[in-house]
Image 1 (cartoon, one colour):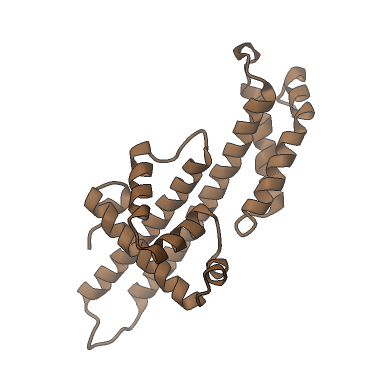
Image 2 (cartoon, helix red, strand yellow):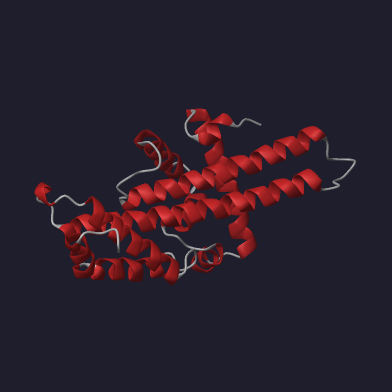
Length: 219
């Protein structure tokens, strides 16, 4: 904390519990996404940054100011990691499509192109759902516009019951596919298929509304 003034150092030390509480909660919420050590590092850095930007004359207690900054930092970090994983998975699928031998009877450049675009659309929808979930958590710096959030939430509400349950549990309740399958009494394969079908249907709805990044991709 060499860059901090004595007053700022005192704020960090006296409010260390803020970072500890956020770390403990984050370690449980993001247990399938981030390690506790990683969350702790993000939380401590955010606490220091909060002390550096805090203005006492605003009258806002530092504890509340720090809490919103630390929680927001952890949410954004988790969202970045989630999106990175989704994009890596989409790239893996895309590369498999691009390099597969395929069937001379059924595969054509057009069918491969359409399937690749569908995979990319689903990846973009999954990324958007992650950002919507974080915005609903109350992050102080939403990563997407409010009208996009509202439109995506409405599109999810319009899914059939099985697809909606899968989407809500995976993206809004931060559950893994196996956990969703166990909770709903489905096989993992069935859950995966319904998840994919839900993303495909959401991509169609988003294209119709012409919102978000998925709207720019057309099969």
